[in-house]
Image 1 (cartoon, rainbow, N blue to C red):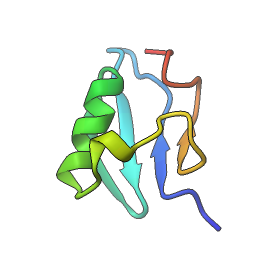
Image 2 (cartoon, helix red, strand yellow):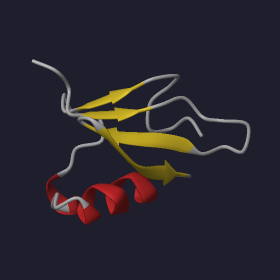
Image 3 (cartoon, rainbow, N blue to C red):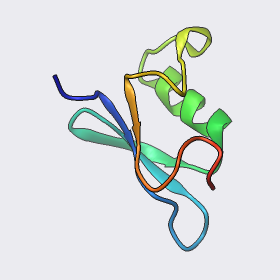
Image 4 (tube, rainbow, N blue to C red):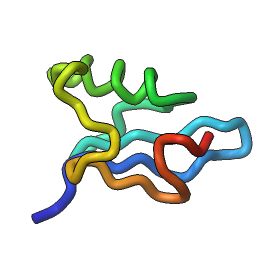
Length: 65
């Protein structure tokens, strides 16, 4: 099963692209931004586990920006 959310490595400006399945949701500059982007896509922020199995972090986890 594919992981539905991918957070890509930080770019030169410190932002990270956030992808939900086949579409880019936007760019995040911190964990709060990831939660906000997922909320805009219909996810409940209180139910999102940034360290959970539904999010794949590339280039470092939620503490790397």
